[in-house]
Length: 188
Image (tube, rainbow, N blue to C red; front, side, top):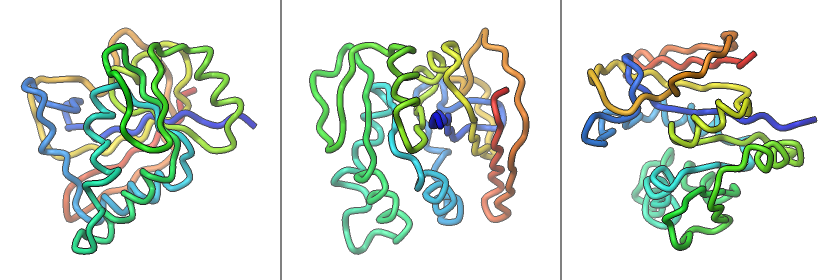
C-alpha cells in the first residue's frame, strides 16, 4: 500500500499562511488545537519541508518543548518532531542541523512518488511553496486545513494558483474556544 502525502496548513479565513511582511503570529494554536495537531501528526513518518518552513520548525529540535516548564502539549510535539524523518529541499541551505534530516537540492516529483511508495507511514508536505510543487505533480492525497478566524487581506496564499482539483470532505471539527475550524479533504 502506498503511503499518503498530506498537506497540513494553518490558514486564515481568507486563505493566507502569512501576511505581506511574512508574519504568521496569528497562527499560534491554543492547547486544544495543538493537542489535535499532535494527534494528527502522530502517525506521520516523514516531514517534507522547504528551507523557510524548516528554519521555522527546527527550533523544536532543542529549543521549544525541551524544558520541564514547557506545557505538556509542546513537549509532546517536540518529541514527535525528533522522532520523524525530515527531508529539506533547498538550493541555498548549506547544511541541516537537526537529527533524522537530509538535504535535497531539488524537489523531484518522481523521487517523492518513490518515497511515498516505499514508506509504511504517511508523509506531510509543509509550506505552501513546496506544497505547490507537490500539488502540480499530483502527489498530494489529502489536505488538512486549520482555518483561523483571522483576515489578513493579502500575503502568502496557502494553496497554489493554477491547480484545479476536486476534493471530498472527509472530516471537520470546530474548536469553540479559539474559533478555529479543522477541515480534512481527500484529493480526488
